[in-house]
Image (tube, one colour):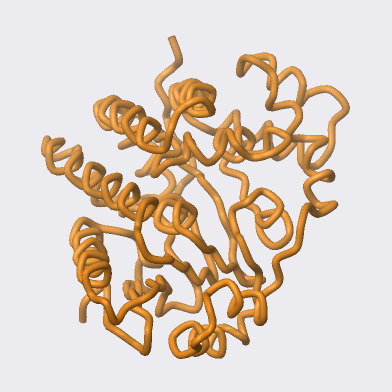
Length: 321
């Protein structure tokens, strides 16, 4: 069966990620099928909105298939690895300017490429089980898929914290950071999907009726005690700030920074600082260049090995310098 299923239901074009055994990790074929579906739905006058969801109750999308990227790199097929990212980034840019409303129904894990497929669209409906993260520095990579556009625009330096440490957020935290536009209970998704497909109401009215769209939450203020440290100008001063007045969250951030690839941390901080002043298209362009450097550096293959292949979580990073 295809890893991406698409078809029409009422007024909606529905794209379903269907690779549950890999938590919907994206490969090049999946990217191309989503792209084909979008083209068909945009041209079809009977389709008034596009909905992206998952067949898995565990994950929306856990990111790109970095195991496959590692295999290509180790086999000396860097051009093939680059092709995956090139088409993935082009798809994300297409989603960001899609002329029809694009709705992501996010239930379960949403990381890396899953963030890319959803956060640049019109609406992101997250359930209580949705968990968001950009954990790339732990595998010797960088938060791409438009991460250098999204993350630095979050309040209280929360995006810098997420991008450097791979920290995850959910619920009101994710909503307050602008990752989700609406919140819904998992049990209401079938009714919500049915209404989106068959209601004659505008999308906004349907979502307002069945979803919560709450404002800034106290949770973000709780996060800010830690994330404010990430407003420091360098990695060294970020660490120094975290080491003062220790807390559980600060300890977790310090541990993540010490376990991540030193090269990835520095590259990520540079990308995020620049990205705040760039368009999404410009951010994707700078990420593409950073990706090309990353797949030529031994930290990527080593990080994917340690976290995703052998799962010993003991990478042997090259020293920064």
